[in-house]
Amino acid sequence: MSTFPVSSLKILVVDDERPIRRFLNASLTNRYTVLEAENGGDAIQSAAVHNPDVIILDLGLPDMDGTEVTRRLREWTDVPVIVISVREGEDDKIAAFDAGADDYLVKPFSTSELLARIRVALRRSNKAETESAVYQNEGLLVDFVKREVRINNSPVTLTPTEYNILKILIYHAGKVLTHQQLIREVWGGNYEADSHLLRVNISNLRRKIENDQLKPRQIVTEPGVGYRLREL
Image (cartoon, rainbow, N blue to C red):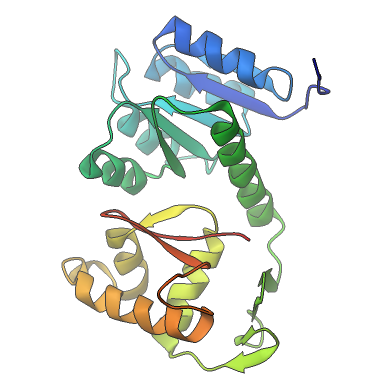
């Protein structure tokens, strides 16, 4: 059986079910240093003491909901939070993302899918720390200093609103942003009910940067939740 050198990267697993913690520990321990917590209070304390690189967080905890844990973590840390839950309703997903979660996996899930989500979260976290003036993703290139956008080396003209949407998606590349989060970031809180305005601008942006607007590869839709800039 293949083995991997244990990384210095730390993963905090938060779940009140011991079998789930055992499964996650066995899945991750060959690649990462794994920490465990079985309730929200212990999770917040462990995050403060050990400064993990990623937190895997169940929503159904005995002392507080995982959404509340995420909200409290976001008061002082940007550590990536991947929610795992049996809840698959749109409202639960939206609440988790609005609280600051980076990703959401519905139980049961495969080990390979979880590892892929962790890699994306780590890449996004690392990019935030070493943010460059130029972003490249497949054929998309954005120069933030010059405010230039190119697709396959051809210049693209965006409206100020389209550029702001793209910039926000890039900053959070790999993370789902809810409709409400995007609207607040771009237009402010007074427009939160105007999802049509967001859809129109996303459609126009896709028309300009996607090779096939009907099958977008860059800006993908998370049905009923929001949008994600997919790193290719």
